[in-house]
Amino acid sequence: MTHQRVPYQPIVGQRPFRLPGDARVAVWTIVNVEHWVPDAPMPRTVLPPPMGAPLLPDVPNWCWHEYGMRVGFWRFLEVLQARGHKATLAVNGSALGVYREACQAAQAAAWEFMGHGYLQQPSQRVEDEARAIRETIEAITAFTGKPPRGWESPGLTETSVTVDLLADAGIEYVADWVLDDQPVWIQTRRGQIVSIPYTVELNDVVLFAVQQQPSEELLRRGRDQFDHLWREGAQTPRVMAISIHPYLTGVPHRIRYLEALYDHILEHTNVVMCTGAEILDFFRASVTPADQDPS
Image (tube, rainbow, N blue to C red; front, side):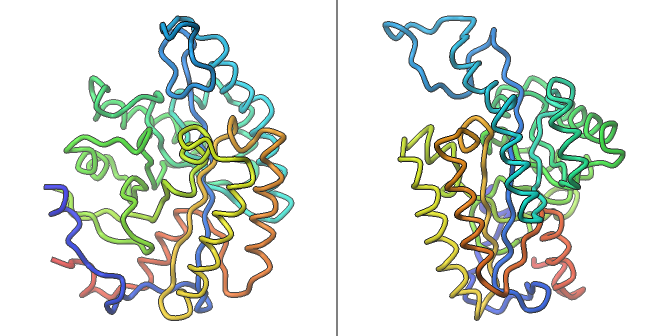
């Protein structure tokens, strides 16, 4: 069923995707703002529990995340604003109230708001997935004045019906399907939504929390990723995602490498720094009516 939703289509074929001004690469940054509950198991940990026995409340690991929202987020805001770049805020519905000042700052900076579940937990553990999607959309709509167009599931986790539920709720694009360097159609029971290229490789959760790479790896890997996509983009435009979390890349020993990555990208021409919704609009502007139904 999953494979049927996104029929195989090599990128070397003739695809209609175009970027403004014939740019080679569209770069979007996803800032993930999540609500971790200290009395529940932490989604990620930096400090293993003594003697391997899980303990609640998990104060040190909750504080590790909380530092990101108290301090690291504001570093992201400064870095992005200094370069005139708007991010996409992937935000838990419940985080809008808990981290209200941060979300207000993102709105003032004209960032896009994207749904990221109501609580930071796997979709498979949500008792009523449709309700959680609806409550997230309602929370973002109440906060920003307009519903989100995009969705990133917590941990990129989906059930067999997630995209159907998202389409039912009016979501236009999803970032969970990391299978291409261009937007592609996803089939749902209500028609189609669009997969916007996201990343697990240039994602600080993978880099630092999972692979435990040194801080400078964000710059090395990001620079290599961009350079290759930029060369390929001379023939076929590409999308590059940079996924960051305040408690990881927002710490003092890593933020300089994010700055250096942006500065490297901005040294190049034929690059569009944009949001996920803007990429969606570029894609839709590229297709003809005949392209709307690839089946």
